[in-house]
Length: 296
Image 1 (spheres, rainbow, N blue to C red):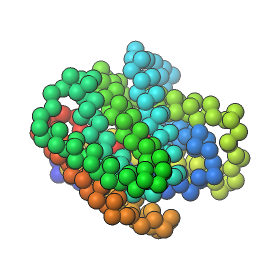
Image 2 (cartoon, rainbow, N blue to C red):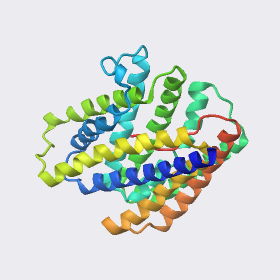
Image 3 (cartoon, rainbow, N blue to C red):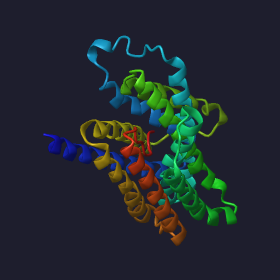
Image 4 (cartoon, helix red, strand yellow):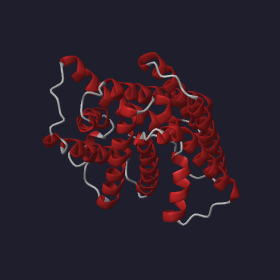
């Protein structure tokens, strides 16, 4: 039974990674539309799968919570992260953004020290150092050419670290997954809608509207599959599968956008993968919650 659950959990994780990767491709394809408009579409149409999770007996009052402050913090930080990675995807190669996004666990470790008063030993500090070097290697050519868009995936990783802390706190007090996802969608949708007066929005064609709808559906389905994967299978088996997103990013980047990863991207990605793998193994040994990007 456990073996079958692990297999099913692994399939859910692979599908989650695939749907996130497809969402990234669509975000780049729809680059003529304002980031705020895409965020609004992601939030609005992403609500559809979430409502299927809400128990029927709670439909009338599912939104009620005593943890309003925590939800607002998680949703606000998550919205900043979504905006940052959407901007990064529009202006950088898929493999570059995906690689830098994997440095998220580094910031989770640092934020755990600052906000959860956790003690970090030498092995995890070594992992943090390797990850930083990897980020610098990937982004240095861009900074040399004054391409500051490399800052945006880093902003995402910072936001991801904060989101991980807040989600950990929310789950510890018993808040359901659908409620956390709902408030995040509402917050990010309002943020996107607030960009409407600035004049960057366009009336989409029927085809482009379909793409915007798919962005919302793919992102939400990917998050739900990610959660289901962690429910079904051992985290030690499913989490490494998230690194397939780098493989998908390289394949999709080349196929759709003629992107060929540079030696800087591949070298930096290697260090970041090693870094997050060290952190993953250590967290697993300590029997602590393990999170890898991403949640959008």
